[in-house]
Amino acid sequence: MNCLGIESTAHTFGISVVDFNGKILSNEIDMFSVKDGGMIPHEVAEHHRKVCDSVLNRALEKAGTKIEDINLISYSHGPGLSPALIVGKDFAKKLSEENKTDIIGVNHCIAHLTIGTLVTSAKDPVYLYVSGVNTQVIALAGGKFRIFGETLDIGLGNALDKFGREAGLGFPAGPLIEKLAKKGKYIELPYTVKGMDVSFAGLVTKTKQLLDSGNSKEDLCFSMQETCFSMLAEVSERAMAHCEKDELILIGGVGANKRLIQMLEKMCSDRNAKFYSVPLEYAGDQAAMIAWQGILEFKAGKRISEVEIYPYERVDDVKVIWE
Ligand code: ATP
Ligand code: FE2
Image 1 (cartoon, rainbow, N blue to C red):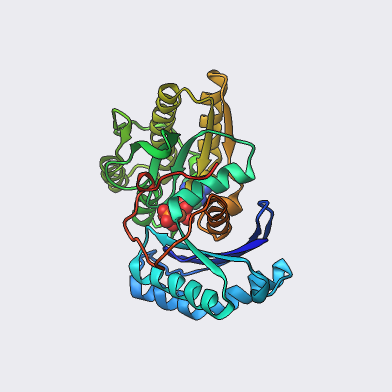
Image 2 (cartoon, rainbow, N blue to C red):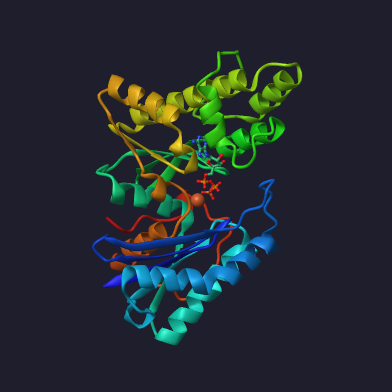
């Protein structure tokens, strides 16, 4: 048995084939990109519509299968940009109708979490999910993924990218910030942790001011990383203590950052906990996670009556019915 996953919530259009035991047979993406990083929803949707057939063909070919031999189709039903979500949903619906295949819709953010436990040996971790848009500390408690802490304003990736735009570092700025940070010295920046939540907007404003007053990019990159990552290590540690979990897993595109990994690793080893980070291919948006989440929910008995999108669905809106 196998599942074809379709991802289309934001800039990435992806298709993947995963077998019901969790073996990832293919994982193809095509990303919408513009120089300044701005995403106009209808342009993203147009991109997805243009590339969907070729991404499908690549994914099927790499998996060595044909659309007629697919047993289940899973699509991202949200959260995300509505016009982009509609492209994925309509494509999934068309394929399922043409081939009389079962279809299921899944939550994109939950899929980010469950692919993490598929591709690592983490069992019941606290999840630190840090992407462009999202910054959340999540754990499974009482049958739902609960958000124990989150950003009160922008996601960390967006914060880094905003600073990067001011500093002329291109988009996305995260990788170059990581590189420049290696040559930087520490400058104090606003460290904002409120209970279990964090905030980055004030810090971004401060870095812009410091940049304008002549501080070096390297120093600001270093200080931004040290400050933001410490904030995340603090709230992750508190969530682990509160939930009595001894595993932490890092998910999302910012998880590519080696310094963030190093700080979280240190925090975990100090408290005899295990740290996991998701391989890059599965850290950002892709469709293997959508296929796998579809498989988990399908196996647990979920069937959908309507092929719909849910642009604002949060992880704690979904009841966890799978093992
Ligand atoms: P989502 O819809 O899941 O929120 P997204 O597009 O917002 O997706 P991802 O693709 O998961 O986010 O991650 C992209 C972000 O990761 C960008 O903001 C980018 O700057 C950041 N990033 C990528 N590599 C690094 C790195 N080495 N260090 C820091 N940040 C990084
Ligand atoms: Fe995502």
